[in-house]
Length: 150
Image (cartoon, rainbow, N blue to C red; front, top):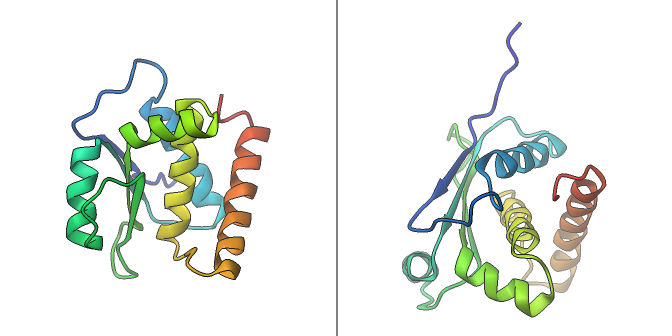
């Protein structure tokens, strides 16, 4: 019997990460782990881009004319794809310095954050922020425990 593989797609749009530090296979493994953890059988698209592109998307969809770290789009129940996460590697790099993380760890934190947004988690209210943060911290902890962030 064939194992049902999720067709998660990883796209580099206008950016080229340094060789070896953000391999598509690593990101796919992490996304697949998150999907399984949450019992989701739909694939997800992750797009890595630059500040210029994410600023344009942010302006179109959120009416904010500025770059951001991550944008998430949930495609709805009728779609074969769960949604899309767009991450600015330029902003991830700035945040890595600010928070004392490696660029890889910061980027993967953004993947996790975007993932939970796609699932409908928000952080506008304190109680919602706590719920979302608890999910993110649990996922990050499991990924570290399984040595998937190395």
